[in-house]
Structures are given as structure tokens and as C-alpha cells.
Image (cartoon, rainbow, N blue to C red; front, side):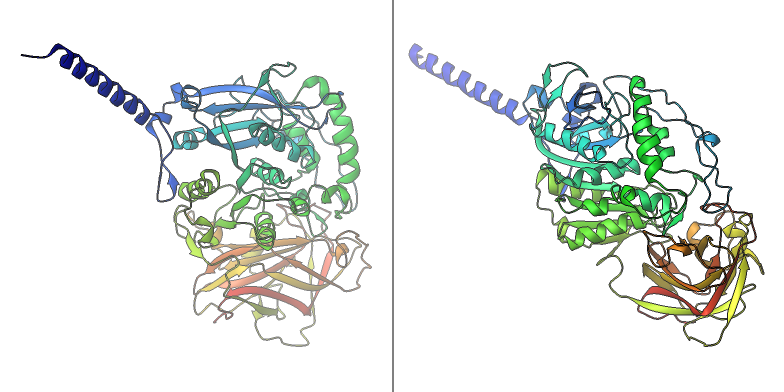
Length: 609
């Protein structure tokens, strides 16, 4: 016989037990990030794009760069897992900002400066294009989301000042381009206001953010993370700039010389301004007058190429003191657009400041992020706080010449700590092929080249003889030579005119023209300088014709293994068809060989011939 009261008791117990398991099951089903081997893993519950929450807003800044009497607001979009709403989940943010999201001007030839004119003379006027804004709300960009949202991050984008639906004026490296992403990070931490409309007063809160932010991006999009980091903004924990422009002077000038970025002959800072100015059409006339036609016109100085206050204000190396963010740099040693010095100079300074730093270099051209695993570990460590030891690992990761980008070689640092400077000296015969030797031979005398921009650097390097360049070549290498660091050149020269271009290429010979030739097969590194700036980067002085001057400068950083059997060639010429202005051919440069020296940082400190 069953006792009725006992039956009720067990029925209640069964119900309570089932309810407990149900609650526990629901709790167990709550999605959250998880980690293996120090990396955030893809979470199935975060991986369905149809369930992501996507919205946009405007973040109020602390500046008024378009002069309309109101604080500029930046257009921001957000992509986040649904659990940030349904389960109250808070997550860190991967943030990318850009001036390119809303469209750019076309690359019509007329928007560039005409480089065909005498040195010291102004170029012909150029076209000022109008930009048609592209894009629809609420999505500004889809970059980063497929990589990071499934791994438990929120992805945020913003259009930089004066572009897209963001207020303000583009300044190409001005203070507002640093303060704009700072404002977005402040909003993600509850310190700045966000609004649902550009001119509205309905506030939007980032209640789903932990306040931990990491930034990344390539080229201009890689410059902005550094710009934000130099403000010292709280919450920006880590940045991964990829091929960033860290100084607009170094981008558009080289040791006093007006020099274009590779692939964009005749580009200058005002050209880039026109290229990105996709913001409010009603504000463009005012922005053009104040920024492009006044500040840039007065400051960029295409006549002398000197370093001045205008350029110093657009050099992020000068602004790094407040920076706290962990830094992983990425660059290609053969990036002749944003050249590898840009990353190296910031990496070097960040190390000196004691910041967590790491650098990834590959052998290719512009762009190229670190392997996803490397980026993942960096963001996992600094945004989720997972102790994966990334800060204690090798400082430098370099993709060797024949390896894939996701298979870099680890080194203690860059430059390689085992690199020792080796001096090489030219001997007479450079119109054909003089020698380049570690033994300094006195009384070599002088040799003269004649400038002619019609001949490309490749043409000159391949020529058996040429009056337009001087070429000095080592004996064939008896074993591989590993160059790691910043080569330096000293040249004692005289010019037949008060101004002249000076270009230096370091090449690997014989030059290969095979279809499958890699750039590392031919180009080791390059550099350019204005002899008028031989004593000061901030003040050029006309050369006294036929008077000799000592010119010293660094070539681009490199880490390259020159194979056994190749020869290292030092090529000195004047106008570089791909990079410099094109004065009328005929200027003569006379090189004093006894006063000329190439310094190469070589692992092991010896080159064997």
C-alpha cells in the first residue's frame, strides 16, 4: 500500500530535481569565449552571422575640425554576438578605423603632381577631384568580423574625420585623426557620448563592452591604431598596425628629397587629402580652404623638401610619450609604398619605452598581416587577460625568402643581435663595374655620372656600362650572407648644378629577369637623399657647383639572406624614375671614391668571397 503523503513528497522532489537540471542546462548552454594554447577559439554560438546584432551610431568628439561651431561626431558601426543582448554577455572589442570606407577619388593622372620639372621649381597645378560617398547604413565595413566575432569579440568600425558620414575635415595626420578614435574608445568605456543619429540627442550606451579594446588595420587603417595609442587613451590595450604610415614626412620625403611613394609617382599629402575627402559636401569648400589650400599649401614645401613644423606635427614618433598599448608591428621588407623604416622606427622607440613589443616582417610588398595565430595570441593576452606568455617569446618573427607568410622564423630581436657592421669600399671603374671590397684602397680618385631620369633603376643595374650610374660590385659570395638591420651610406660628391637628386640602390647580381623572379632576387634595399641637406634636415642650402660635400644617410631596414654565388652591388645614380622628380637630363654628379663607404649589418660580422 502506498502512502499518499509520501507520493506527493516524491512527486515534488522529482519536479524540483528536473527544474534544477533544467536551470543548470540553461546555464551550461550560455555561450562564452574559450581558449586553447593561449588563443581564443571559434565558438559555435557566436558564428551565425544571421544572429549577429548590427547597428550604427555617432560618437561625439572633443574637437570641431569643420568649423561649424559643433563638436564633430564620428560615424561608428558595431557587430556583436546576440548573446551580448540576450544573455548580458560583455566582450572586448576589435576596432578598425579608416578614411577609405565611404569611397575615394579615382586615380586620374591629373590628381597627381607633375614630376617633370627642375629641382627647386614649383610643379604645374593639378586637378582637385570630388569624391562621391558610397555605402549604406548601418554597415560601414565588413572587415575583421568573420575572424573575430566567432572568437568572442565585438567588432567596431568608424569612418575617420571628414569621410563618409563622420563630421569634420580630413587632415592626413593632424591631431583630429588621433582624437577621433580616442573618442570612440572613450565611448566604449563609458567616458564619451554616443547618439543614435548624427544630429540627434538620443544616447546609445556600450553596455556590452568590457572596455578592453584592440586595434588593427593595414596602411592608413594601420596608421590610425598608432595615432590612437599616442593619446594614451585608457582601454586601448593592444594594437597590431600592418604596414602603417608612421610619419608623413618619411612617406613623401627622404632625407630632404621630394620623393613619391612607390607606385604613386607625384603623390603628396594634398593629393591624399583630395583622395579621401568623402564627407559632407556642404563642408568641403571650407575644409579645402582651411586644410588643403592653406595649412598644407604653406607647410608641405615641395620646393626644398625640408623637415619643418608641419611635418613634425604629422610624425607619430614625436607623440609616443603617453603610449601604453602593447605593440605588434607588421611590415614587408620590400614595401616600396609605405617603406619598412615606418614600422622599425616605432618598434625601436616602443622597446626603449619598455612597452610589450613584437615585430613581424615578411619579404613581400605592401600589406600582409601576421599569421592569424600570432594576432590571436596577442589579442587574447591583452584583451582577455589570458596568461599565454606571448610577451616573453621571441621579439622578432621574419619570413625567410622561400617560406610562406604563415611560417616565420623566430629571432631574439630585430635587427639580429648577432649582426655586426661591415664596411665596403668602391674602387675605380663604376661606369662599367668597379669593385666593392672590404679593403680600403687609397687614391681611387673621382668618377662622374650624368643624370637622366629616362633610364629606370632596373635598366641601370642590368647595363654592362652606363654613363648614368656608377656601379660597384663585390666578388661572388663564397657562402650565404645574412644582412640584418639598417645599411648606411657615406658619399663625398660634387654637383654641376645647385641642386641634384641622389639615389642609391643595393642590388643582388646578376640581375634576374626570369618570369618567376621574386623582388628579393634583385633588390636588397634602397635610399634617397638631397645633397642640399648634407648638414641639416631642416635647412637645405644650394650646392656650390663642383664643390665636394659629404652626404650620409640610412638605407631602408632589411633582413635578407643573399645566396652563395651572388654579388652585392652598390649603385649610385641621380634621378630615380620611379620615385623622384624628373629634372632635365644632364646634371653631373662627381663621386670621390676615397670619401665613399657602404656599411652593412651582417650576421656574424663577415662576408666571405
